[in-house]
Length: 319
Image 1 (cartoon, rainbow, N blue to C red):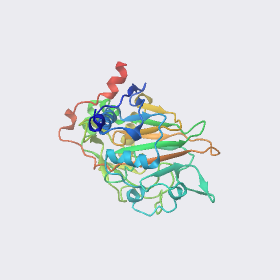
Image 2 (image 1 turned 30 degrees about the vertical axis):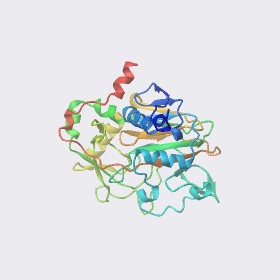
Image 3 (image 1 turned 90 degrees about the vertical axis):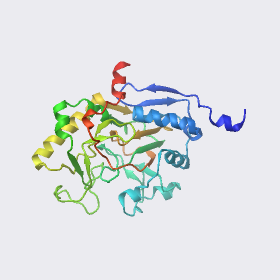
Image 4 (image 1 turned 45 degrees about the vertical axis):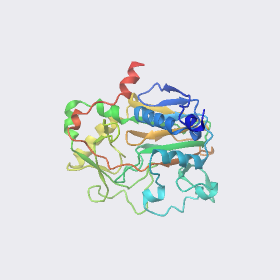
């Protein structure tokens, strides 16, 4: 058999759906070695299950960059934040490519070298404060503490599909302004203030009902709870609606809990999910490499209320 033919043979791997509303674990597959044919299968599984988990991976940071490029155009944190991030020294410390962001609690000279420390990280979708939030997002677990630091994901397709029909009709056409006042560790951004009026500060507006550009299914797009405002409503009306949508979307029925192991690679669809992280002991070391792909400007399709449901949530109940 020629090498060319061998390249198109599918890799042998198995799939286990997590006992949750989203998520699937892929077994017996080394991501750094997959063929183009197998990547297409993985990509379809990612769209179907929203979160993919790969255990015992041997990938380097450079191989993570190659992987993220298969999903689309990689984008660095510096470009996303549109500012110099020289205060983050982890890439120099570990000799990493610029496409990698280091999520860690390590400190050097009593200053953090990466992002997000050891505290709780609240529910969010990554870079929702951008006109084009990221699409594929991935983490490689390099060092993991013995306890804590678990990550939770929620299925935003399911959150939309289970809304009462009258609430779907009410939010159709409405948008949420996404400001950039605090980060997901609830730290105030440089130059921002908690006293800012969300109605007056700049930030992109995204539709509450967001139609996925690849699956054609609808999702709730909430971004971040803090510094969010439903355009056209009073502050009181906006807060009430946001409280209702956040409570519904983040309920445990829609959630998968990931307990990290060294060597894990987790890839999620940032457009179709929210995620958060538990705190962990500050004396423990936690190092993860993150990378992401440029996304699209969220939109609500014409006749969105007629769009079909995404199948993953119903698959969960049929198990």
